[in-house]
Amino acid sequence: MPQVPLRVWSNENWERIRRGYASRGMDEKWNVFTEGEVVFLHRSWTGRGIYAATFAPVDDGGRRIVRAVVERDPKRYRGTDDDYDCVMLELVISAIVLGEPAADLRARLVDVTRREPGSADAPAELVQHSALGLRSDS
Image (spheres, rainbow, N blue to C red):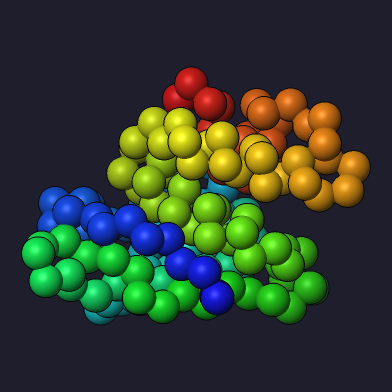
């Protein structure tokens, strides 16, 4: 990925990220697991790996993503927008794994999605549910 989230996650966040996340029902769309320093994000229904993000320690504490890859085979993942993927990677970790409200990331996801042809009027709730499987108030 040419763009990666700039956020520095605290050491406590990193411990929670390392434990991963398993979807608990049909409405949840992501499974997340870690092997060493790499966090893998897979779609829960298909099991397909979409993102792999390598984390590294930061001098002042915490960790940040230093490298990430995204699936670009159109048979496996239709995404081609670097901005969308950067936001989505951070949003899945923040909102789903860590359970943060992530209102700013949710708004950015909606904005990026609405740039796509035919999506300019997409309701925010629909965009978020389609991508995350979570309601905006969850």
